Length: 156
Image (cartoon, rainbow, N blue to C red; front, top):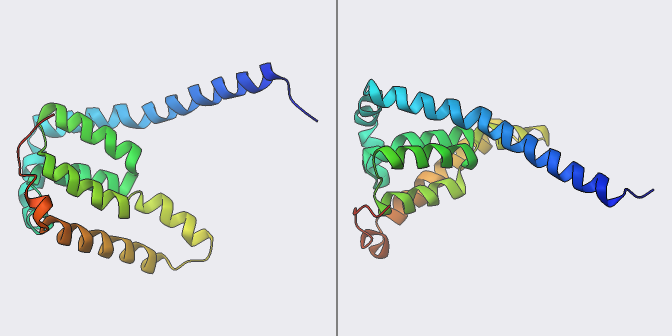
């Protein structure tokens, strides 16, 4: 049984529109929360408390919140957070590169770990392993000469 072109095109359009709405349901409230956190300076307090982690990773404290959001929520929502934060307080290029390295290894820790656990993997091993290797490779990368050469200038 084959579907007509119109049915396929309609399904593509409605599916795409539904996906955009679902993403907006998360990103818009997230941007509002980020704005509230910025106004009440919660971001600065959080960045100060996690300064040791950001220093270990070779990043400025500004990078901690997008790093946390991406680790927990995933790259799509983390990217939305990163874009909004970068608009308000530009993030240095070096931090963006280091965040990309961390994101590559460890993103959507809840969602993707749940998928692996459903397939029979160990929850603790998957989560701890991803976090460990993300930290390890980001720390190593932050100390590489060509990453250090990027500097902390902002060009966004």
